[in-house]
Image (cartoon, rainbow, N blue to C red; front, side, top):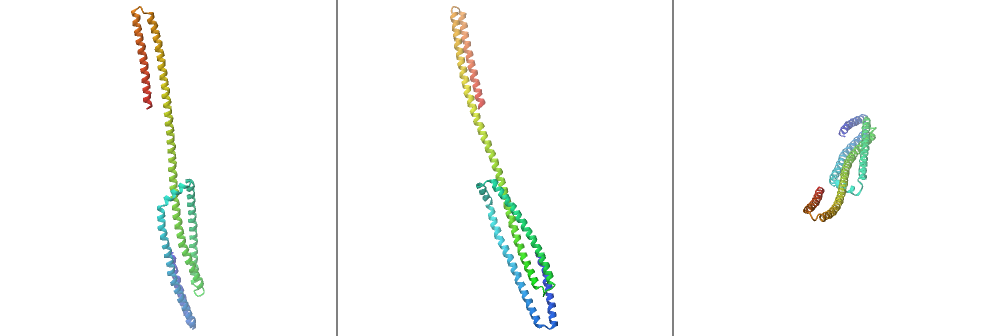
Length: 292
C-alpha cells in the first residue's frame, strides 16, 4: 500500500503543472474572470485533499485500535478454552464433537480462501483505479470528475483491503482454535479408549480370580471327602484284620508261638495303618501349600 501511495504523488504534480498551463493560457487570452475561477477551484481541491488525508489516517488508526482490545479478549478466552472443550465433550458424544470441530476447521479454510480471493480482486481493482487516474491526469480540466471518482474508488479499495486483512486474521485465529480443539478431542478419545481396555482387563482378572477360588474350594472339599473315605476304608480293613487275627488266636491258643505271631501281626497291622494315615496327612498338607 505504501508503494501505491508513492505512485499517486507524481500525479498530483502533473495536475498542478496542467493547471499552471491552463492559467497561462487564460492570461494570454485576457480572461481575468476565468483565471479567478480556476484559482478558487484549485484552492478548494487542495483543501479537500488536505482534509481527506488526515481523515483516512484517523480511520485506519481507529480500526487498529479496535483490533487490540479484541486480541486481549481473545487471549483471556484461550485460558478457559480447554475447560470449555472438556465441558462440551462431557455433555455430548466425543466422536460427534470431533467431527463438528473438523467441519468448522474446513469452513474456516474455505472462508480464508474466499477472503484471499476477494483481496486479489481488490488489488486488481486498485491497479485499475490507478491506471484510470493516470489517464485522467493527462486531461486535468476535462477529467476532474473522473479523477475524483478514481480517488474515491482507491480509498474504498484500501479500506476494503484493511477489512479483508482483519477478516483473514480472525479466520486464521479461529482455524487455530478449531485445530487445538481437534487435538484435545483426539487425546481425550485415546485416553478413554485406554481406560476402557484397562477396565476390561481388570474385570477379566477378577473373574479369573473368582473362578480359581471356586475351583480351589471344590478341590478342597473333594480332598476332604477322599480323606474321609480313605479313613473309613482303613478302619474297615483294620476291623477285618482284627477279626482274622482273633480267629487265628482262637485256633492257636495252645501254642506260645501262635501268641507271638498274633502280637506281631497286630503290631504290623497297626503300624501299616499308622503309616498310611501319616502319608495321607502329608499329602494333604502339601496340596494346601501348593494352593497358597
